Amino acid sequence: MLNIKHSLRFKLIIGFFTIAVPLVGLLLYNNYYASNTIREQVADSNKNSMILYSHQIEAALNKETNFLYNIAVEDPNIAALSQLLNDPDEYYLAKSRILNTLTRYHRFDNSVDLQFIYSVQKQDLFNTPIKTQSYEELQSIKTTIEKLVKEVRPDSVYFREWKAIEYSPHKYALIRLVDTGDDFYLGAFVELENLMIPLDLIHLEDGFASFVGKQGELITNTAAIGPQRLNTSLASESNEVYQVVKKNERKYIVVMNQIQGTDVILSAFVPESQMLKNLYHFRRGIILISIAALIILMIYLVYLNDIFLKPMNNLVRGMRRIKHGDWNTRLQPSKSKEFAIIDETFNSMASEIHELKISVYEEQIKAHKAELKHLQLQINPHFLLNSINIVYNLAEIKNYSVIQLMCMNLVKYFRFTTKTNQIAVTIAEEMEHMESYIKIQQVRFPERVTYDIHITDGAEKAAIPPLLIQPFIENAIKYGFDFMDHPFHISIHIELLVDGQMEIVIWDNGNGFPSNVLEQLQAGCFMENQKGEHLGIANVQYRLKHIFGQKTSLAFDNAPDAGARIRIVLPFRTVEQFTSF
Image (cartoon, rainbow, N blue to C red):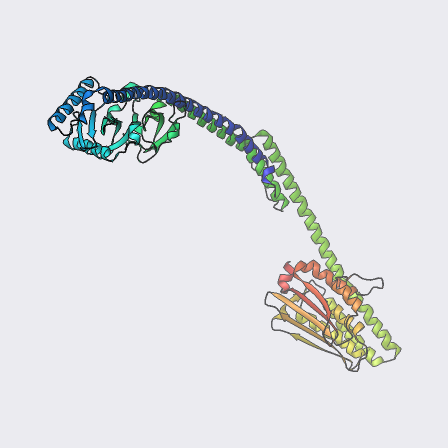
């Protein structure tokens, strides 16, 4: 099997991706770089706006803080409040004069929503008018301030910077306190919504601005990005890094700046889609170029596959089929002239090789049949020589009656062999022939040779090569018979097996195979030795191999408490089936 890494198709595909991937990657990187540059420029521009407006807020809050310190030190009415605590009328007039002073100062300044004074001893809170649109909001503001000043301590952070406080659900304000030193607190209250940057001034378009707490949570426009928290470490003026937040499939570029003197951060949210709208056609062009490049390369790959890879693959597949013996394989004409010539040459060579292989195969069959014929004819001279030798021995002892009987059986035997000189005989015919042979031996050795033949039902119709069993009977008498106290017995059992096979077992009660001979037989050494011995066994082995191939087996051993045993297993065939092979 060809390693796919070494195939031409794999190398061309790798080459294709080697060109296509860097090209598309370069285009996509160019798109990313352009988009990122726009983001940085927009973020930098909005960062500058955040810094500018943060400084304006810082200036307004510092101005208010300085005013509170000045009035706490210089206004005589505030200094007199602590001395008028026991005079309600004068105390009230002093409060009114202080409130008038605060009101006149902020008449034309809307940076602060209200100012207030709180007496620690009397727990009295009075303030400038609260600009609200509802009574509930007014009460909420007053309640929040009262709660704060009652709980605050002299070392509280409210006396050092402006702190954000929630005075109503999702509404925050900045509060700053100044201690007058006579158990009175001056304070200012600024709603964060009034400090929001007008969107048209910083050109946020579809974006928005918001104040962010120390933990990164939004305290104005709280529903804009939900519960997400921002990274407040990016809020310093020296930090030009922006961050990206996502809400409802919409991305925002966020820039922030810390408002000095407070615990809040000013942030701007710019929609990425609005920011990159001028890059739409450029980005679209890059994407279209990338897609077009991929399509062109894919078309080229398909075209290359059609005119080169496919014919090459068909040629390799055809060669593999030829290698595995499918000589009918032919290649279809290719669109390429060069491959058309190769395909035509391949088809011509395949046809010629097929015809040549058929001719060689036919010659082999003829030679095979001639060899079988020769092997079969070898049996008769071999038996004839042994029979003449027996007659010669009888003549030596001048037993003429036995010689006459022997000659009659020989005539009967050889008449049968001349009639059965064919490719196959039935088991019944072969056993009848074997009985004639054994009777000849019984004539020679009266009452010294016995036999029995057992054939299961149906096995008598099976076909085998003629004279297949005789060589083993001959060898049994020749080598196993030794004038024992008991008669020499030969047994032949033939039965059908369950898997379409037939078994022939031949054994005797003689001396058995010598150990060295048995080792050679079991190892398959059936070739004729220098003295011409074992010719019959080698003949049987050759015929079984040529006729049945691997479907047959021939085994030798010595039976327990008996002599030699031969076991032949071969496929069951009738004479008609046998001759058709």
